[in-house]
Amino acid sequence: MGVLVIVGVWVFGSLQLSVVSLDTFIGVSVTLLSVIFMVIIGWQVINAIQVREEMGKMESRLKFLNDIVQDLAKNDKLHSMEANNLQSAICQMNADSYMKQGLYVEAFAFYTFSLNFAIEGDTPNQSNNIKQMQLALNHINAKPTIPQTELFNQIKYYSEKIRHTVSYKNCLSGLFEETVAAFWQKMTSLGCETNKHE
Image (cartoon, rainbow, N blue to C red; front, top):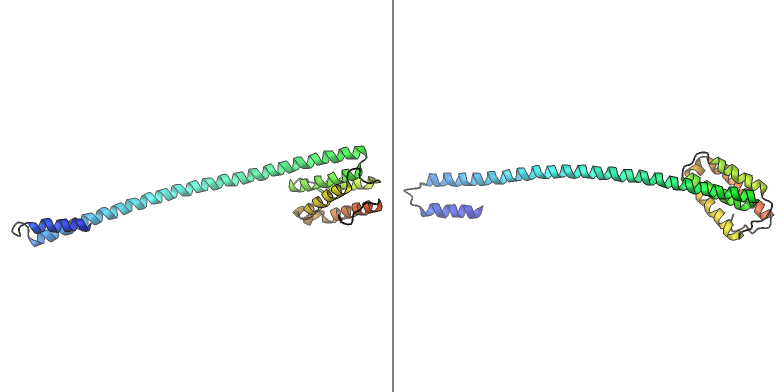
C-alpha cells in the first residue's frame, strides 16, 4: 500500500502543476486510498464469512464424531455385557457338570465364578447363583480333587471381585458373605489349609 502511495506521488509530482492542481492530486490520492481500504475491508469480510462457514462445518463434523463415539461406547458396553453373560453361562454349565459328578467343591467354585460374570453382565436374579453355591455347599463332604491352593486362590480372587461390585453393596452382601464363610468353615473342618485364603 505504501508503495502505491509513493508511486502515485512520484507520478503526480512529475506532472506539471498547470495540468494537475494540488486539489486534484489530493482528491485522486484520497480516492485511491479509499479504494485500497475498501478492497482490504471487503477481503476481510469475505475471509470472516468463510471462516464462519468452516467453523460451522467443523462443529457439525465434531458433533457427528461425538455421536459415533457414543454409539461405539454403547455397543462396546453391550458386547461386554453379552460376553460376561456368556462366560457366566459357561461357568454355570461347568458347575452343573461337577454337581452331577459329585465334585461339590469344584461346583461351588464354578458357581462363584458364574456369579461374578453374572454381576458384570448385569444378569437379573443374581441371588439364584448364590442359592446354587449354597446347594453345592450343602453336599460337600470331601476335599476337592484338583489342587486345593489353586482352586482356593481362584475362589478368593473372584470373591474379592464380587465384593467390589454395586450388586454386592446393594443386595448380595449378607447372603454372599454368609455362604462364603460357611464354605471356608467346611473346608477347615475337612482338614484343608484355608488360613491364607479366607
